[in-house]
Amino acid sequence: MATSEYKATTVEGQKYNRAHTIIFFNPLDGMPSGEFQREDVIVIDGKKIKVPDKKVPIVFNPAKPIDIINPETGELTGSTVTMAELFAILYSLFVQEATVFDEDNPE
Image (cartoon, one colour):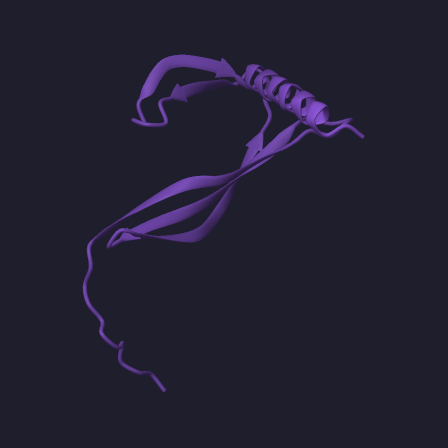
């Protein structure tokens, strides 16, 4: 049986989509790949409601350019990097952080 919605009101708010998790796969004998796990964020009365959304696959193409976007403004910066350069940056971040972690957590 359907019921009425108790204290129903009309509200104004904002909705946007974001990547809440980014996963990169680096198989030993294969091509890197990854995925962005997205979510919708709905803001009503200062409260944020997060709703899972579709995953976006990342297909690795070393030569493919990536336009750099300012994360604060959403505007293109005019700079690009290739997926190969991004992979080198992520590898460098791994080595840097793993080195510090291993120094702080000896076996």
